[in-house]
Length: 293
Image (cartoon, rainbow, N blue to C red; front, side):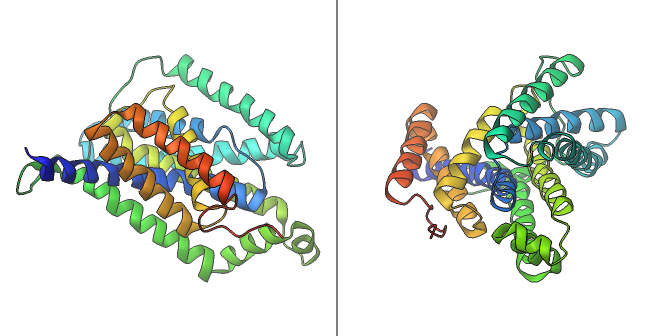
């Protein structure tokens, strides 16, 4: 293949990465924006979603499509329940103190990681995709499932935007984000809002993991890269900005695909890290974030 087909393939692979990264980073940004805490265990909740997807798909058996749909429903619900329990038993007890929360979620990170190693094992295991269809493009065939990841992510991002901007639940989240004490004074149950936000953030990461696991396989150490890249997306896009999350995920994902294809994956990671550093220096609030007053 010539340059054009290679470039198209790199962009397509980058779009798949961007789609998964946008969902994962949205969960992190939502928790960071509303609760003002850094969830260092976010990557391990992503990993837990992938591991549970394998467990559910294996337990269901039979048709790969049936197992995948069951995993897509069950795994995020379990991860959300784990996150809500962690919020109640850990974060609430430290009163959401930023420093204490970092230490607490580091502990949660290692607990989830070691539990996965103990009960799941050290082997990487695949989940069969729900369908195996290849679309015939002019120069090569491409997986229809990978394109379905992009479409699914786009739908979920649109639904998230609608919930945050056009529903009472979104209004409550935004009110809690702007002023916790005033929200409490107006009768908003801030504790329940925090538990729901932490669970929703974890569920978004779990959905992203279920979508990608037929491509990358489930492994107990797979949470590190999603966590680091999600932080990069949140920093570049701007805290609490859905538009910034999507744009930054596209920038990082597509550039990663193109640079990895024509140069090396290491260079792609270096450029992403440099971009984060430049944003922190010249625009700390991110591309679409609001500057602190």
